[in-house]
Length: 521
Image (tube, rainbow, N blue to C red; front, side, top):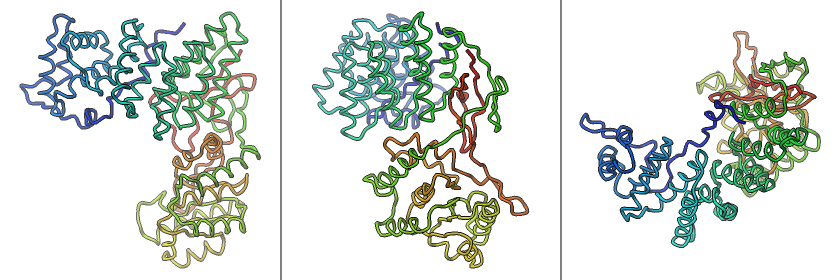
């Protein structure tokens, strides 16, 4: 079903070296002896020939002499990891046979790396019964010797177990990791999603997908491919059922404000055009929101009154006063601020004073900083936003008097302690009413992370209400990025419009996706 180009693109897991003490420094701090008579470890690996003609003892000595951090304790793990990263799966098995015939024992780090190798190998070639037995034996030995597995080793075990009949053990490891406030790698979630679908347990797959997003990780192309492959097989010859299943995936991504990357987009494009026989056109949709192909407009982005109320309550409980205290403040200051907001809300615009002041200048001159802030506030007031709150810190009282008096006269001005995180106060005030906007260049990721089940609402609310200063012109006029009123994610209004990012592309604050696919039945 899948195109050769798509298969080439689906190289999702670039396995990294384990983070245990045995291989610290392998990635970023590896010191290679690059004297002329020495070979680099990459050159050494190129010398591997066949299973019976490779002198592994010689290779190990060459590697140890070429990279100073490699020693007898970690050289085996290093070889396995490097061969796996280079997708030299046959060569990795040669090395494993060498270990076995030499009666050598791999340390815990090497065993963890080996489990990841088996998972990576499984994605490109079928794992044998012998491999599965080895995986289960490794896991059994590890749990007997180390009843409490480290998060890194547990993560490796999840990868290995996911391709065995004992894949449900991964769910138990997930729960154990949560007890230690440890979050599995995104690839571990992907491994279990794939396992659940291979074993016809789609509800488990959906539960893991939801959990992955709830811990602020992004689904990979491998996740989408696992679901779509499952549904294509399950609903063969049943186009309506297949369409509903594929649309459920897109709706899930849209509801959680998830942008697809190019590889993920190709997977959806393939199933729509090949299996469902829809017509596809690559388009660019501008700020007008109109598709140049079908001439339909994107849906307007909204946060309902009920969603806003839910978000405001969650932010108050989980961020302002929650058990995960993010703000560096004191109860009295928080209480005073809440009283202030209660008396003065709602606002038309809430301004992050210091953030805005430093947005266009990189100086600490109070005169220049205060002039920037006042210029921005003047522009806001001239745009028919009458009720403006400026949040800052107490050291701003030393700024030029005329500027501070202007802010105090034309706005509500609230200064928190210099040691407090004013962003938390800013966001709470911005949630004072459904129409309130705010201005800041901060991405607010830390605050979103503290929300338990409302992250997707927060992100949508942020996209609708956040403004950002770009520059001040010579006349003092503020030029800002303003929110887009259109939904930025996959959406359906008879046709499907799906946004995506190129694989090497990132979306900056308040940018609108450039790349869209228009799909017509």
